Image (cartoon, rainbow, N blue to C red):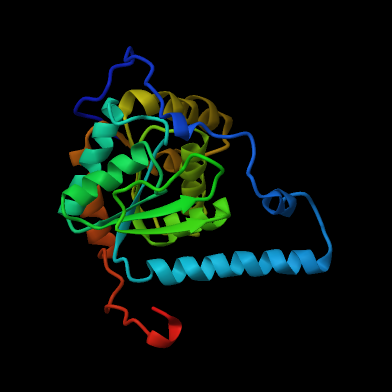
Length: 265
């Protein structure tokens, strides 16, 4: 793990929040809640399975031609005046500068910042948005946007097409994405792509819990902590993406996939 550069000091004021990004207490679609409420009639389970499968196929078809991506995670709750927003813009622009497609959750806040940085730098900007009642409207800096009903399908897409992951400061959703990605790498379900936490003061306590609690308890190994890179510098983060991902994984999908008219592509 490493650090450098400068981001907001620990004494930075509590940020203003985007009004429309406050998470509601529940999803508006009762069928989504019903999915996680135990067994139901076989016909209902079949309909749910078809909806999930259809959503997966739609995601695969939409993102198949987007080129090598890096996914940027981050909170919807920081507005454009906050220093973390500027951090997101810079990392998006730097990724675009090395020819990477920037993928985010497609919403406001730091997701918007990364998409905005990529778009203004002339790169490609993709959003995998989630359907929620009021907030989480797709931001206006997306070249391509796909919207999902299910969080787990959305997370699949954010992971499937990326060669590296950069996490800006965030809340439960960002933590969920970070730790699911770490588990996939730890268990060998996914190659050891770079996973970078950007924002030293924000993330240092979390990494401290890993080192000071989980590691001594034996619930993780030293190598597991080393899966994380901690830094303040977008330049350092993108250099790691360029050097590690290009060297080890080529940042390529091989021959350019050809669109098939009969598949509606």
